[in-house]
Image (tube, helix red, strand yellow):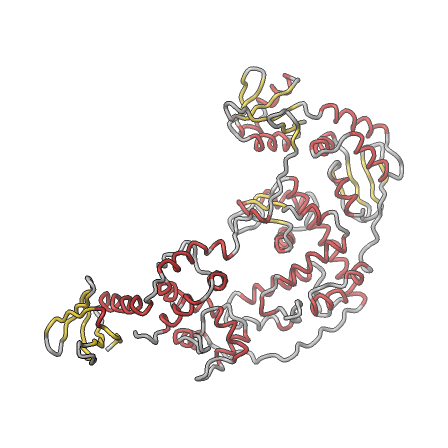
Length: 575
């Protein structure tokens, strides 16, 4: 207890910090929200609790742990003070708080690895390893594109642990998008780090940036994800130049973290899958640039990617055959109107009534489809495909889904009564509860929910607004709408509470807090009291109560209970 206590020193530091620094500190120390803290003394006590210090220490990189280990009476080295101060592990003079030093000694079961000097440069990969890395990069880009396309079409169900649901996982494997669940999990992380996928609301959804990424070249797609991979690596393995340490240095980066070895293994696995790292530790030319400066050598990678084509063969059996990897922009538009059946050097796509209906629902017309296919095809447009385009377009919009402004219910209309009758008994649509209401079907589900249910069931549906005009709906999510707000937003209410509770007389507030703690623990304390003649007298009391601006305590030496005005107490400490 007393004015020099760690809790008070930290509370003073926190009160003097600006809101942005507080939010960053709370985020780095993973302070829970909502939080029961009422003032800066509460939050400093929480930050200096043993379990909170343990959690902070195990997340420290080896360099900062060594700084704590080497701290002397003058504190930690000046170069390390800012980082440790920002984590509230040292006081204003750079000295570790007592509980930090104690918990560090308790957690350090083995000597820390010595500080490594300049990292040893990995050996350049030979031609065989480079070619294999380029092939992995190409395959990974194509697989992630398939996952993103699937999420654009319909968000992927997510389990509580964040992985894709079993049903969605099986579908993506069966469709040839990914080889197995492990590949899917790695691609989801890579896509999320690059801002292409968002896992909010128990769904993996494509973000607004996903469509633009899909239209880029394979090399540009790869480079965008590679940059995000390097930028999102843990701080201990990143460098000041925007790159990262050689992977051989990663395992020792977080010596106290029991979860780090598994995490480092996963990071390396994803790096190998994306063609950044190699199994033998050597380094392709494109990775050397990324590791050193955070910017990959796209030209070096492009030289090891298979050549892309911009034309296909349209067949009378309603298929399109690409003789090589189709350029991404053309491939994405083709897949908006055809189903990919095989994925290889020669890829096959099939046109169906359902795939063309989806294209028309997304804004295509018979003319735009014919114009695109005419430019893409080496063999013209076969008559069976032209007929399918025309008949599909003529059926489009047979179902119109809108919201009744009077009742708020969703209304499904059609000029084909038989189609409505079919929908009314379709078991796949039972969840939206469509029932007959005269010549229409109505539902209590929202318009968008009914639309996507009909769309997924392959019905020729369009959504219309109040003016009966067709509206295009999207199932993408925006990263700005993510449920994870930034640190300033998350901690705004807590910081406001702390600021409002921080009065001008911090000394009096701290003294009262110390006395309250002594009363709760029936602690024996030494109390310095200012007397009317300006002298000071010290009493040794067992604190028994506080209230009405006075402290009550049992003076065992005199065997009397004393009542002391709080305004006369100059200091208090444990006896």
